[in-house]
Amino acid sequence: MTRHSETGYVLRGGMPKSYKMLVVDPFLRRIGPPNSDKQVLDAHAGRGEVGFYIAEHGYSVTLLDYNPIAFNNETIARAESSKVRLVNRNIKEYAQEYPASVYAVHAKDPWDGNVGTYTDNIIGAISIFQDLLEPGGHMLVSSIHLWGYLLTHLLMKQMGFRKIRVSSWTPTTIENESDWYVGPTAEKRYVLSCVK
Image: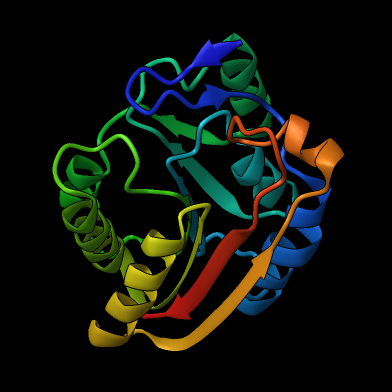
């Protein structure tokens, strides 16, 4: 078991099946069929389960995580065999190098582990995603943190994002055991999606 150095979360594989069905699959339907022009970024990717799942549907995917332990040997081998790109760096640096280059962003608690106040991290993360997205691009943010969810929703409106969709889901107890976060119970997750 590998623990994230700053947040204390355990980095595990496995994406809950309910997350695929209730969150990721509807997101893929909204972004439309894959083609070579539709670059998808899985930000704060961890082991990349969401990004690999998206790549299995034919999209060109980049997994991005700033934590050096995020990409283990299994993740690296899987990326090489599936042609998923791995980038181990800060999202702000990535956005400066590749502005308006991404058609869709998936981010799971993108503000965790960053330096600064919680509110500043959320504002910074959403601003960076806005810079990364090409016009008409899609963003999906999921969070276990209610305040992060509420602030993100408010920011999306203020920053001019369109078609904001709000939902939530709760993993089953069995799914919670292999979920992204350590916790004794299956907690509700909050999900926001929108279009730039």
